[in-house]
Image 1 (cartoon, rainbow, N blue to C red):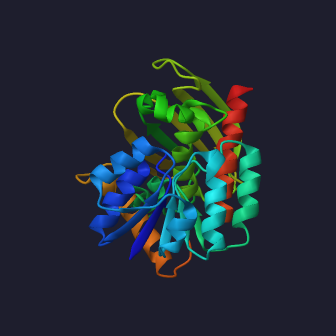
Image 2: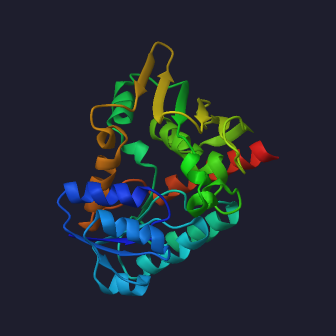
Image 3: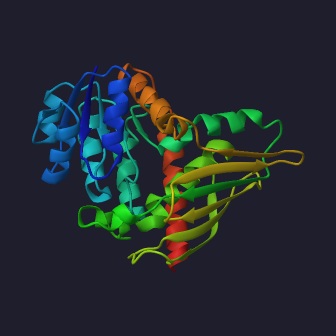
Length: 297
């Protein structure tokens, strides 16, 4: 199995490569326009380095993981799909509605061959909570705590820029929307959103709250804090149940969904369809972009 990495814009491909190795992947080929991050990657992993997407595709990867800044992601995804190679894209792939519409144009002609998702959707805790629901959920709450200190460093400051990376409400808030979508299904619409900055000298925000509504009338809320120890949790209430699961465990990569997400990516490489249809991922992205727009208006 050969995996290609197109872009090393943030931390996820570094984790993805390690998880892929643990799943038996021996051959990694990578291209990146950021030499410092490429050097870091080479220090951690034995890999074949190429200098363009064309060279990466010529190496014959079975699947390509794209991790680029939103402004560059769509062109890379288009190239991968045009070559007939399955593609997984790490969030965030669109920082605004224009980029989302352009990505929709590129992806729509390749059903089942493209996937973008937060790894948290694949967490065993989320799967277990959904299985425990014996009746429809009325209210689901996602708690997302992810320190944004790394977003403030020069090489990753684009993530804190609402124009380039969407800011904290998009890059971290997407995790929350994904968790809610995993439990309540598709169709979320943003009702309200608020933001604030309390801890970091951020260009976007380090605190947020989002309320969403589903076509069934079910409500979902996200509490987002961009400081402190990383922590994710999901809770659900029905007419008779109250369930709560923290995404935690002895193996962090299993608890946060990295391992099951990679297994799904490798199944795509073997010919299975994307584990999350693009139509559903598009609505998750649309909801989080709506939340950011509302909070900043």
